[in-house]
Length: 198
Image (cartoon, rainbow, N blue to C red; front, side):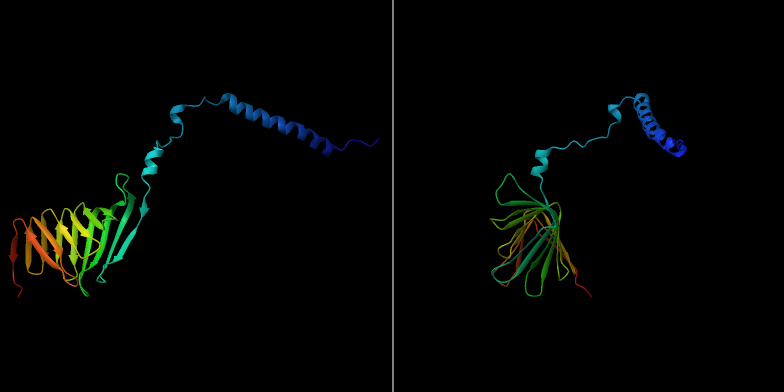
């Protein structure tokens, strides 16, 4: 009978000993560890699933169209979401827009928020509205309403216009006119300061 090989004996012993040592270490970890502390558990965000469903938003939506006379209008918002209290109405944040007044002149809009009625084709801008023409005139008002189907813009609240050589304040403003024209009218305590250049 051949003698036992020491290497084989060692391997056989380790096959039994090592799993027993591992089992002992694991049992020591579980037996000596502290009980779980609920205060140290990972925090979970408290989320209202129904509210999340109501707050579905689009990022950087773009609304563009062409008026019957061919002039273009474009509105871009930071975010937009449907108004669940009204049909065909979109609520927007941080709106920027461009309206073609004539073939060469444009009106650029910047507002903190907006409400776009798609069916009526009206955009109510609010949150401090700033509008500037390509000729260098700047309009400031708290709210401005833009008609999207035709050239039309109105400021029902106090308005201030600054431009080359003039400063104008009024209680309200209306921009409109027949095809190919843009006519401004002011009401409500109009004050004009004109300083000729040169």
